Image 1 (cartoon, one colour):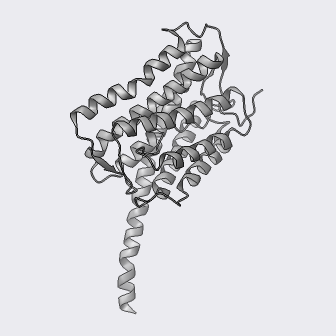
Image 2 (cartoon, rainbow, N blue to C red):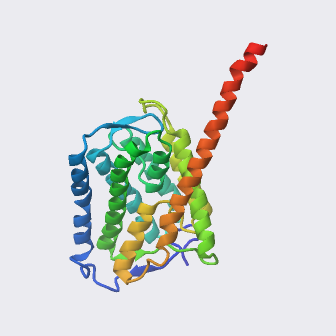
Image 3 (cartoon, rainbow, N blue to C red):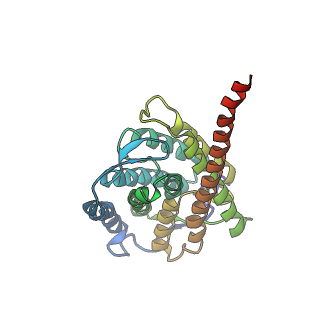
Length: 293
């Protein structure tokens, strides 16, 4: 029996179909999808001027085509690492996944990417912008790159090893419990991102990546045996789609892992804005208190 801490609470399937049995095989799918971000981003970028985006944290960076590719690469390695740990039933997989997320965040922070690697995080950041309409155009590219990165990662480990796995509630738990857990811990993850990400343009010498990676590692140990601890629609899409190509099933739980993180992002935004309002009100009262002294 797999360790209760292993990410796949679900079936692991080995080669009931040949790897090349679906439209040129998983490598063919992966190659086609890998070209997707460039094609779609190029079409969007052609209609709008590439302008600098400022995130909620105040970091400015061009997030057009380059941001899309950065999110694609980062999400690919995040999902690929998750998949390899799952296929091997690695007991300490949360440390591996949290560590690579930390490295990816620091490695991408000096470039053009947003360092999100998760559509739920992108949605949370977008909803905290003052000019949401302007940010939404770039958020579409970021999310597209993330989804394609997750899909290509799932197809890659399927092509290499002829094995897949599916996300589902752990043994003894039901779909409602898994949905609730995924929503709550996704909210926590997005809230941490909104709270600790740099507030200025200089990202050097800051430790925000450690906080985000450590939260994900802690969540993996806590709820990996309950829901699988995906907390990421791009990861869920890549894992479940590759499993579907391999076995013909695996989509019955996809809705949990797509929509629960989005709900979590909405909860995180509400909490973040509420905390920010309380802090601003407290700061506004301090000068008045000093003047009365």
